Length: 584
Figure 1 (cartoon, rainbow, N blue to C red):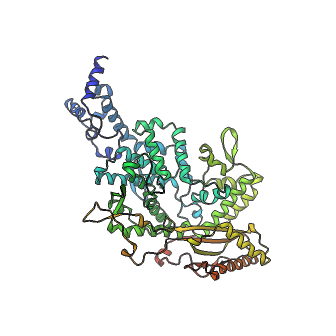
Figure 2: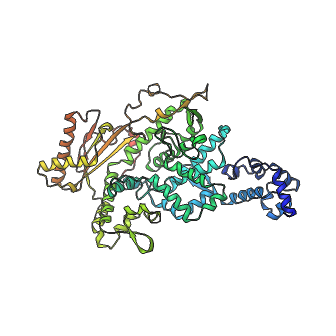
Figure 3: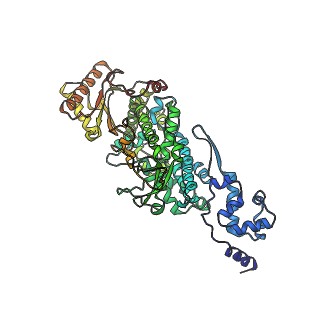
């Protein structure tokens, strides 16, 4: 060991290990004083040496490594200074229409500047609802940036308010990255792909975008050689596992979390995707963003909600709880979700268009393989999810790819998409809502309708009828999510408790889920529409008479674009209805 090694060894011996991880957070960079950051990281003696040598926070970042070593500064402290210097120049400022100006951590910037993340620019947040609402042009890309920002804000507020939680900079950065990458696995037209196309193309093989997001995250890190970059910013392989756990849902059936942070920091899993009660920053961003782009009014205040949050011990496990006076605000949040579902996400015309796009993609897969893969080979659309290198090429552009293809094999798919372009859509001949306890499967509905058509000597075939059913709920099927939330009061902020529904308001619904069923007819001539409509009326009367549909269910029958009975906008105030620009 030479003299310089001895000096460095002694210097490190007098410096205790950093009190926190080496990660330089945005909060650190925003404090504007690198000496304060060094002290926070456990290098108080190094700061004194820098001061003795006439260096200041404004000059030390321009000092070379050799000059710092001559001052007796240890290598770990020099590395921290390097990270500070790089962070100041590589973090990005985003001007977002929803959250205003905010900064993005340098490691998040590295992730954003990859082919896999940029793919999100070509996935519409609301899928084919853009064909109904001209304002719904926003994409998964900007939503992911917003979730990243809100995730960092939320966990930073918790750390500032409750230092005893020992939330580290590592934790904050991991939560931000989870928010950034939680939607990497979405396919063409977002939820249409995993809710409609994949179940039809791969029956019995349930694949959700959360699972695909984890696989795409691994592929992103591997293909862009980012492992060393993660290590540079202080994140280990265990931290990457924690990021994936937040995306994939680590909540067990027992109601407890499992994972790398589950034992002491399980509450961190409730920030990006909260499966305990569905209150998370993913929803906060898309509520605000979707309402803004659609022209709806958003009554939920997510900033106030964050400020009223605390982490408390509930049955031996740390959970995020909210101030008791916030219970009304949280019910407003779920009402906003329901409003978006009714008026946008499950818009009748949007559902028809997504059914037609799904049909076109299924027909394309029957006759050819159009997704370019490795070594000049091509894959079918449904096969692409088996290989992330192939799947990264599958976006909303599949619509145009089929529409403008010269491949004669795609003629049937092209005709379907051309009908969408020319607004020659399938007709909705009936709509009904049922209790979720009496839920019917699509195949059973279609079989019963076809039996009625056959008995009526109808010319319509099974292929002429399209059924669409979906569960409309507050996020937890037939359960009230608020029953899974704990609150605290002003007098005793450390004592969590539940708030029964009847203590909040008599206007809160008693049922929190229903099944929406819509029937479409591909043929548009008057005879076919009449036959399909009569079959639907007979089918729905069968359940009404038998009492099977008696629990407050309602039905709508529409022919040739004219609806009777209850409108999809039935419980919406007039001022909300008139604010929508909807192209039917």
